[in-house]
Structure formats: C-alpha cells, structure tokens
Length: 296
Image 1 (cartoon, helix red, strand yellow):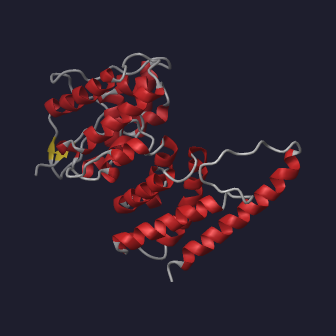
Image 2 (tube, helix red, strand yellow):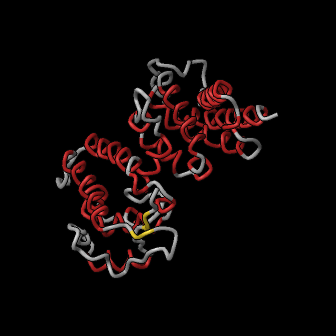
C-alpha cells in the first residue's frame, strides 16, 4: 500500500492564516487541482510520496458534498443536520484509503485540512473558533476521523456506524478527549457499547453524569491491567457493572434510577443538597473501590 505524505501546518502558520482572513471570515480554500500547496505548508522528509493535489481535492469534494446535503452554507442549519454531518464525515474519513497511515495521527496534517483544504466547512460548522482549525482532539475533522476509526464496527456489521449515531456528543467527548480511552480503539469501542446498553436502561437525563462517573474507575483499572485482554463476555460484564455502579452513585433516595417520573424539589433546597453531595461522594468512593477490586 502506498503511503501518502500530507501537507502539514504548524500552529504558528494556522494563526497567521486565520489572522489574514479576519475575525468574521475564513481563509480561501483550495478548490482545484492546479491550486498550489500553501506556501506555509511543509511535508515529511521521508516515509512515502507526497499526496497529489487530485487526492486532496477529492477529499475536499467528498466532505463538501456531505456538508451541502446537511445545509451548508446556511449558518442556521439545525443541530440534527450538524449531527448528521459529523456522523457521515466520520464514516467518510475513516474509509478514505489515503488517510490509512501514520500521517493521520499528526495534528499538523489535520490543521492543514481544516485551515487550507476545507476552511469554509470548518467555519460553517464551528464559526471562527481557533481550536477547530488547529490540530488536536478538537480539530473540526481530526475528532471525526478518530471517532470513525475507533467506533467502526466493521464492514460486515449490520449497523456499522451505529455507535457514532447513538452516542451523545457529551459521551463522545468523554471518550475521545480522554487519551487513556481514545488511545486504545478496542477499549474506546467497548466503553461506547456499554454506554449504548446503559442508555436503554436509565433516563436520558442521567446518562451525562453516569458517563462522567464511569470514566474515573475505568481509567484507574486500566493502569493495573489491560481491560481488552479480558474475553468479550467478561469485559461486557465488568463494564456493565461499572456503569451500574456509576448510576447507583447518583441515587440519594430509595427511588430507582430507571425510567420513572421524579418528585418535585423540596422547598428548602439547601437542606436537601448537603445530604445529596455527601451521598454522591460516598457512592463514587464505593464505585472506585469496587472497580479496583475487579482487578485482583
């Protein structure tokens, strides 16, 4: 397989290009095969051949077509359209052969893609937020490529991209902005599958807190043993128990966590919140200890 070296853009180069474009605009994108590589871009000295302008434009056109189908360039495209864009771009980038190499692990490559190749789409999706143009886990396209690579169930799966579709943005952020989880694709996918199972059991309003309370014991356990070394059934059982424990840590009364209408808040909220905080801390300590005990 050929390894293509992609153009790279340093953080300083991104800042310069964005400054030249102005606060309320975006840089001029590369739009055809005769457009020169940006003068501030660099390439790796070895390890492959430089990617052709044709391939770069093909990537641009594929992602631009997805954006147009989701409302681009309308700045008022709704949340559903933007979520659909993220899902389809994740799948598109994860299945782009030219990005199937170590080049896609470089922040500066994604800085080039967001700032030079597709700055108009980056701006449409996120406005002029600079961290979406820079390389890194918040880059407009790098984050989607990583999701696609980690959460791809495989070409033979009946619902190949279901995890990216079903997880909320908060759940995706909790997984992919924690290097301890996102650096291990097998673990990231196992946690995502456990989230989907938990989301069918608990109220949607609880899942954000449950996911946040789950990450700590999983990362602690990971320091002691490899969770992906467990057989599939044992790993499913363990992760489901951690999610259950995280849900239990949120319970402060005998009312079950599962789908049930909540009572109205007490009039004296201060008297109610102190026991809540104390109970929650105790629950999290118990969850942490229980998770560690599973590694013995």
